[in-house]
Length: 523
Image (tube, rainbow, N blue to C red; front, side):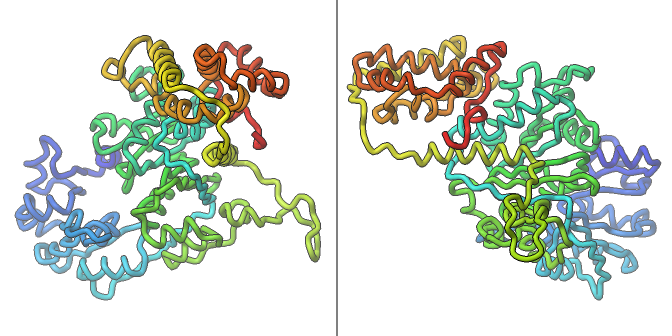
């Protein structure tokens, strides 16, 4: 446990119940600070608290993250039983310990209702309330909505290409980012995609450790190995830690010591505003540095969220005020473009008018390039998602459709070097960046694609080489189709910018750039 190690280094004798080799010293009361879960202290080690060493020397009981008393100790969201019922029973310690032992409940997020539950369950009488507020003025809140469902790994991957590009260029100097994923599959897929795309560049060349301790990218979920978890927590406790990007479920949550975090991205909203404030609060701990909280709301991602969370996402009022009002906290004054995306849209910080504003430029703030890039990519993804082809331009027989599918899979197999999922650390979709979903989309939309230019723009190819090879496969099968006639008619109309983009790609040692990053908003 990293916290006990840190306390011991400060000459505070600390341990946690369950640590190997400490049981005798633990029971004899030789430690200054003892950490425990509610389940342990109320069951297997209940008698220990009744022993003389503890009855005579214990000075206080601290309940950290005490909002879990309500969140985990009581039934919520229609559940039949509490997630961890012993949290609601922590008050039983009152009957075990001397009456003079005070109980201190700590939490960064507690609404009025949650506070009342904490006070009631811990049997507090006339408690002293110290409220430091939950507002962090240096965090800018943004919600980005998309029609995507992100069942497609190609669309999912495209959103995060800007972060990969930053890692390749800045390496250890890249901004530190946590991506909270609602689905464990997203957490796993994104980690594997990043590792595959970065290759040897996923490791810090200056680090003496050529293992997880030297990676710029990490994953943290319940099933993650204990040693890896310790390594991740140690890295984030150090403002100069190697890890730059972490993909995590809610497992990387409460009680984590996080330093130097600039951006928190939520891929899908958490269950409620308590969780959201907890997780976004990992950033902004350095009050002198600007931080960002970006929530990506995708299709059907709000099905299991609270009404207050839905209101935060869909509302057109200041997001900071909406968030703070839930915790009965008064937000401080923040420059509109640094407050939230809603306020930024009406920011007039550069307006010089005394009366009605006639300025052409009211605010030019654009410091968060990651947010700008993600918005642009999602805009283009949704434009493709919404594209409606009303007219079939190709009559492709079932036999030729089957041949194209087989040839595309053959090409995918060549990219994988003939290896199958069971022979790869990841899977063929991720290792080749040429997924079976992409092939399915090509086959489905092929009758509606009039020419090469539309083909290149419509599908999410990882590289121009993938796109060109796929088009060549299609042409080789349906050479007599109208699609070739359309292609010939439009070949002279392909924009010079597309040609220059392909030229620059071929001149950069075949470094694959995502096509969405090279296209304009008018595509």
